Image (cartoon, rainbow, N blue to C red):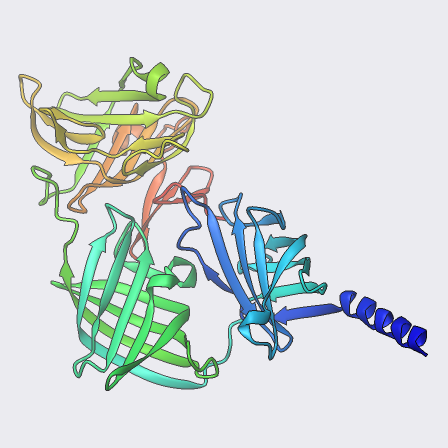
Amino acid sequence: MKKLLLFIGCFWAMSLSATTVTIDATNLKLNEEMAGFPLYILRMEASSNTAAIRIQLHVTAEDYTGTYAIDADNSALVLPAGASTDQATQAVSGTMTVTRPNGNLTVKGSIVCTNGTTYKLNLRYETPDATRRDTLMINTLTLEDRTLSEQEFQIYGFNEDSCLYLQLTVFSNMLEGTYTSSDIYKPYSGVRVISGSSSEYFDLLEANLTVQKSGNRVLVTGSILCQSETNPADIPLYILYLSCAHDRRDEPMEGDATEADYEAFFEDYTQDKSEQALNGDIFVYARNADGQCVALDVYIADGETEITAGVYPIVQGTDLSNPYMTVHASEGIIAGFTTPSYAGYLNAESELTSVWYIMAGTVVIDEAGRIEVNAINSAERTVHCVLRGLPQGIEEVQRTDNPVSRKILRDGRLYIELPDGTMFDARGIKLE
């Protein structure tokens, strides 16, 4: 009898170690605070009626996609449903595949944990239905416009009776426009409802916002879908009617033009390649008979020694890990030298009498070496230059060998359309 009981006990233990549990979750949440340079660490969490899981990945692609094996860089912690926190079990083997079939992240795979259980993963995010609606009309908010320095802006503040605090952080290099969930930095967006000495936090799930200037005010309309951290079943849809003072955190650079836009055409240009071998950039200079000039600091493609055709986004600073095919924005005057990229006017002694510091936008270079600049300066005045081109007019009616690209303002955003119809946004990213 003892042998039989021993056999049954061993069989039960073997069955336990071979248990397979599926975690089928529709509430996958991302924590992207450390997902960029230099750490590239993405954290995720999800839960279902079988278990909750936390995942940490050392991502290898900009959109996080790929297959990741459990190792020193990639880990997962699983808490079975109904278990106490001390029963959480660590993954010891397995793989997880991250995809974006509909734009949202999906994680599938199979991992084995220290408790001997194999967990099949089917994790994704599906927008839940709102359980209630509320309207927020707040005209006391603060706007921090960091669109030029950090390519983002933030709107935050209390409502009139200070019982609700709203914060929205938006990735953009222009203030006005329409923004959806993919533009919102969710870790720094959401709602806090205050009741006495306690607060309830609502995480932002989805957003659809329109931002417009109106005089010295900035208006925000649209909606945000949020979810309570303490009661996940509470999912309010907030309808927004917001107004805030335009707090210009990005003040125009000293000496930058503030009252007029800039447009110039140049028949040709010169290149200074003295720093190409050392830094990988080439300086482009042009001037015309009207005293106009432009200077561009162009970082060429990886492995090249010449400027090649393409769309070059204008970037603040230089990311040394990936500076290729960009144009360096001006840093103003350093040691008495006006740093490219800039445009302006020269006097008879070739001295700058007025300047537009080029801060954001794109530079398009075609196969024939024609260069077109569509940008803004630190005061958000537009800068448009064509190098190796003429103003559109009678002289160009018959020209078909070198058609110009077009700049388009749509919903408050700047887009570039090439002659073949290809569209790019102001960061130089091709639109599908």
